Structures are given as C-alpha cells and as structure tokens.
Length: 171
Image (cartoon, rainbow, N blue to C red):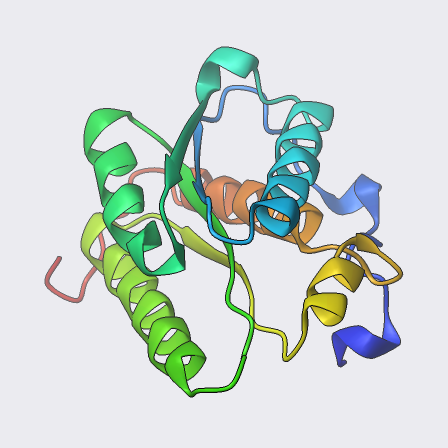
C-alpha cells in the first residue's frame, strides 16, 4: 500500500519480538537534518520501547545518504550488531541525482546484508518534495524511522531464530 494511504508508524505492537539482548547500529545522514534527525529520534525511541538497551544501540552520523553504506559497514565492523538501520532522505529536486543515490544505497545495503549475513535496513525517504518528506518524518503519514526500527527488530529475531544455521549460498 502506498504510504500516502497509511500511517508508517502504525503497527501491531503485540507481534513485535523483544529487542532485549539485541544490538543495533543506526547510521544517520546529516543531509536534510531536519528530516533525518526526526527519523533517528523515532527509530531510537522504538528500539528502546521494545527493549533495546542504550549501550546496545550504536549511532553514527555520515555527511549524506550516499555515505550510508560506508557508515553501515564501519558500524558492522566495529560492533557486534544484529542489524544496522540506515536513515536518510534524498529529495528529487531538479536533476536525476536522486535516482543514482537511491539505487546505490539500496544496492549497497543489499550487498552488505548478503556478505555479513545480517539485516542492513533501508530507512531512506525518497520523496519528490520536502513536504512529502516531512509527512513521512513525523507528519501526517507517521515516521519511517519507526518502520525501520520495527523491521530491524523483526529481522534480528528471525536471524536469531535460525539457531546457528549456516547460509548455503557461499557466504
């Protein structure tokens, strides 16, 4: 369903596993800080609400969304995290730069997920306008930071539920 038709912060809390005992990385783009910092606050609060401890949430700021993948790798190399959440905002603007950045970040995070065998969550807004971004960073459509945190918690729990199973695709 298109986000224009729903609130990104709505979810059934009873279906979310506890984040207690899990460790998370959050990488936040400084570009469009008004938006990305709102995403970060909602993401952090959601992790804490579901049991993640402050000392198990590792945060890094990077200059822009393009740098999210490098920051995500740095956090994964530095800390034993169960999931890394990347938060950014690339507003379309007058050129097609957004397409290149969004594709590079999505592809980079997918590759990191495959190589590291753990989730790297794409929490990047890709709106046409600043107003659309604000609507998704605490405005009328909720906050994608909440959605990113819930995704990380759920994916970390899935990974832990595998009970030591090894990937069978060469990684």
